Image 1 (cartoon, rainbow, N blue to C red):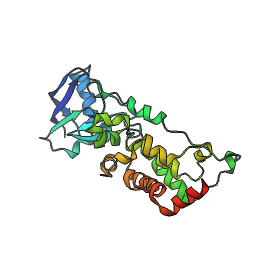
Image 2: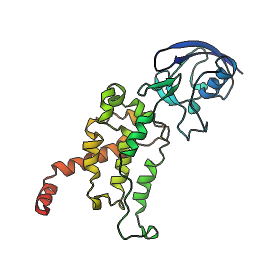
Image 3: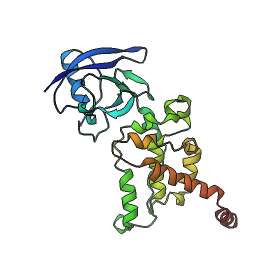
Length: 252
């Protein structure tokens, strides 16, 4: 059976905006994105919302629902009581373009700062050999759909906009961790060091492992436990392990 829900939707642009109230029809089995589309079709044809696949795989429809970062297409209306007000707002950590659409170009800028995978010199692609455990580790990180919900909820970015210059956020520290853990990555052959890059260029030290990024990930990637903490451990080993320090001095 359908019912009429009370929605509060943020309307505005980079200059100013406000929450506006609407009564919208909801049918059984629908998700929040369905209701937003009905709102566009019946009351607000100029409402801006970004979406694409409607299957939780493109990451386009990221927003905040009742203050929690979520995908509009993966949030079922059945999780809300029929008399509950559903508030939909744009992601708070990124500049608003219009209505529910935000400018997420910060994330693509950070992605370009990470040196790409560097295969072993003299090894042809068909000759690559990896243990299954290493394959599975990389596969978990590659489940990321770049919805940027982890970036949005990370308080280092969310509460301190100035940190964006020095902190890439959990999504791209996870990318650095993926490459650092990859047994066939030979970035070091070119004089690079992904551990130093993580600490000095991408702000790994700002992360205090609250696991808020993991909690909002729609792909259930264990970002903190499997990427950020191991990367921190590798950085600590590099700087503070006495045996590694001795080896480094002898090598120099």
